[in-house]
Structure formats: C-alpha cells, structure tokens
Amino acid sequence: MSTVQLETISHRIGGAASTGGSSRTTPVYDPATGREQRQVLLAEPADVDAAVQAAKAAFAKWRDVSVTRRARVMFKFRELVDQHTDELARIISSEHGKTFDDARGEVVRGMEVVEFACGIAELTKGEFSEQVSTGVDLHSFRQPLGVCAGITPFNFPIMVPMWMHPIAIATGNTFVLKPSERDPSVSNLIAELYAEAGLPDGVFNVVHGDKVAVDALLDHPDVAAISFVGSTPIAKYVHERATAAGKRVQALGGAKNHAIVMPDADLDFATNHLIAAGYGSAGQRCMAISIAVAVGDAGDELVERLRAKALSIRVGPGLEPDSEMGPVVTAAARDRVVGYVERTTADVVVDGREHSLGSDGFWVGPTLLDNVTTDMEVYRDEVFGPLLGVVRVATLDDAIALINANPYANGTAIFTDSGQAAREFQRRIEVGMIGVNVPIPVPMAFYSFGGWKDSLFGDHHIHGPEGVTFYTRAKVVTTRWPDQGHETTNMHFPTAS
Ligand code: NAD
Image 1 (cartoon, rainbow, N blue to C red):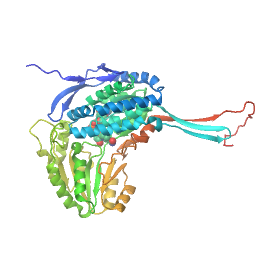
Image 2: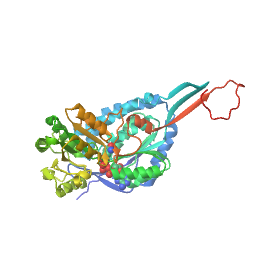
Image 3: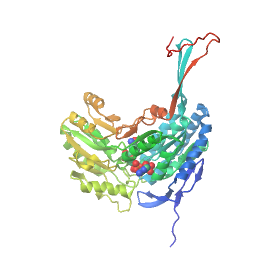
Image 4: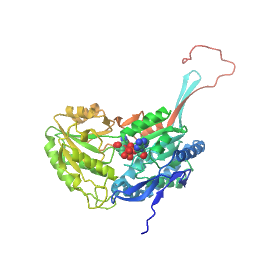
C-alpha cells in the first residue's frame, strides 16, 4: 500500500521559502472531513531569529523609503488581495471550516485595513506650532519602531493579521507574523502577494509555529513590539512576558458577548440577527453573541423564535454553496462544545450533538440553551462554538449590571425600539464595542477595534488611529535660529517670552 506524501508548509523568511532548522511539524486538517490535508513546520528559536534578523536588515532600508512609495506598495497590494479574494477564501474555508461566503467577508474586512493604510501619508502628518516663544517654533513627528511581530488566532486567519501588518509596514516598520498553526497556508500566499506588490524582501516574514516560536518572539531583543490576538490566558501571558522584555504590547483576548433583547424590540429582526451572530462561523468569532439577555416578557417568544430558526440552519461543508454553517476547527473544539452541552443544567432547547452528518468531520450543530444563570460554567467560560444561551432578567438595569459583572468586555449589543434605553445602555455599559440593533459591532478599519477588561491587555486598541500610534513613536522638536551675537546667558527654567 502506498502512502501519500502530504505537503509541508514552510516559513517565508527574507522573501523566500525556508525550512530552517525546524524538524517538528503539526497536522493541518480539513475540518469538514476530519482528514489531515497538510503539515506545517513548527519553528525553533533559531528560525525565529533568522526571521527577525531578515526583518532587522530590511528595516535599515525600508524606514528610509518615502511615505509615498510605501503607500504605493499598499495600493498595489490592495489590488492583488482584491484579485485573489476567491482563492484566499477557498484556502481559509478548507483549513478553518467556515463557509466560502463568510471567508470572502473576512478577506474584504481585512482589505479595508489595507485601504486605510493606503492613506498613511495623511495619517502620519505631524504638527507644527509657530512662535511658541519669541523666535521659537515647535514641531512633532512620528517614526517607526523597528521589527514588529504579530501572533494571531485561528478564527480569522487573514483578517486578524491584516489588523496589524498593513499599518505596521506602511508606517515604516518590518514585520514577522506567527499565524495560527491550525490554518497557516493563507499567510504564505499573503507573503507572495506582498512580494508581487513590490515590497522588498524581509519587510514581511512568516514563521509558523507553536509556543516555542511565540516565546522566542516575546524574548527576542530585536523585536520592538508585539501585537497578539487570541484567548485571554495567552493574551495575559504574552502581555506580561513581552512587557517584562521591554516591548510595546497590545494583546487582545477572548470574549463573552451579550446581546440585550428589550420587550419593545422587533423580535423577528432580533432573532434573525442573533442567529447570525451566534452561529455564523460556528460561533468561532471573538465578536460572536454567546448570551442573549431577555428582558421582562421578551423571553418566551424570543426562545421560541430562536428555536425554530436554529433548527432551520443548513449545516454542511464550508465549500458547498448551500451551507450556512460549517464544522468547528478541530476534533478537540468539537469535544469541548459537546462536553459543555453534556454537563449543563440549563434547558437544552436545541441540541447540536445530534448533527454528525455521517462523516468524520468536526461537526456540532447549533445549540440553544434557555434559563442559563451566571453561576453555570456554560455562562462563565468562553465556549467558542455554536452555542447560544438565553439568560432572563427583569429590567434593563439588571441586564446592564449582569454584563458589567462579567470579566470579558469585548462586544455587546442591545435590540430595542427605545432611543432612551439605547442611550442609557451605551453610556453605562463597561464594554469596548457596542451595537445598537447591530449584534456584531466590529468597527470599520478607520476606527480602532478593542475590548475592555479581560478582553484586552495593553493601552492601545488595534488598527485605525490607535494602530498608527501603536506602530510609531513621537519626537517633538523645539527650534530656534538665533541672531548671531545677541544672546545672553539665563539660568532659569525656560518659559515662553
Ligand atoms: P489561542 O490563544 O489558543 O492561540 C492564539 C495564538 O497564540 C496562536 O498563534 C497560538 O499558536 C499561540 N499560542 C497558543 N497557546 C500558546 C501558549 N501556551 N504560549 C504561547 N503561545 C500560544 O487562540 P485560538 O484558539 O487560536 O483563537 C481563539 C481565541 O482568540 C478566542 O479566545 C477568541 O475570543 C480570541 N480572539 C479574540 C479576538 C479579539 O479581537 N479580542 C479576535 C479573534 C480571536
């Protein structure tokens, strides 16, 4: 019997494919069949060092490339991403499991950050104040940091890295990406598109790997900044270790996003949107709604409508056109979701364990739980699967208090017809991203994305204006051109004259 040799995904360092010194690999699955389809190399510290050295060498030149030329590379890159949208989406779908349309949406949302980065000349204009004292002017400008690294999760293999590298590169930094080992292939295609766009070798590098590669980046003396997106325990760890090593760090963590449904809400509208927000991408979105908070007498009718809709979702392989929801990413992810359903004492209204589709894929169907309470593990934990729970409370005040007591604070939403309730909600809720009749309020690229509390460690949100700030540091220059021979010595602290 012959064995089929699986492709091994290698790193991209200094503009070329590299196997480096890696000998360890991990399987990359097709979640729809459960079959191993590729392997990916896992970098050793020496491979990470090679990528950082390539990025460091490239930085010496890239930082001096004019802002206009850097922007032109971004324009070209944007065109190439646009042209390759379907190819990128197919790769994402085959390794992540999400539907093709969902993957296309991810490419488009990522591309919007590239479009934002095309305006880098405007975004990095400095400030100038004339005559701040007699004969004295003041100006400020921002410069790149050096080698920046991105460590990213499996759930958006193209969009989340694009929250980082277009802005880092457009501002004159060089970049090392360590994508998720679950769906690594698309990052290598991005490296090829950057090269085709004219980005010099070494400005964008990809090292594949696990904790070994991550730790090597966190400790590396030549890495200036770390952008991390992933689960809360790892985000906290990354933030602590990298700040201890003197780096600038933004580390975005996990989530437990609540949507309040007020009794005055349009329940058809709310149901349709909650279904999409709870089960889209099989619930594997950091902005997925996992808890609906039904206020007053909204509960019974809401649960009944959610039940009917959840049962009608077409679950199937992401690359089949009819599928509305694909599998979860790994067998472990499926077992985790199933475990929560098995152990819960909440009312199981729709049971996703019944979805096996007769294959070895990582299937679990939409699951709906009612009468969830805040002491249940299924409420406390980020399940990260197609599991939507309904909590019932009496008033809007109760709903706000419940959400504010949760340690996660990424996104939240309210469904209501009342402007007064919506205003009260957005003023008092302690969450970073808020939707009013919008369940997944992901800000556009020209705003910044980020949660509060255990959903973000560090001072900067990601992309948008805060992304530009994160990847640059300021200089302020005070200038005087004195008349020769007319100055006297004055020892007091300078004040404006
Ligand atoms: P994860 O934390 O397991 O992995 C994220 C990255 O960290 C990967 O590159 C992985 O290789 C690396 N990593 C994993 N374990 C590590 C360890 N022990 N030490 C060092 N590095 C390690 O997350 P995931 O399962 O890939 O992604 C899902 C999580 O990401 C969810 O919690 C989700 O909420 C979160 N997420 C958050 C946002 C956000 O914007 N806040 C966006 C997307 C995903």
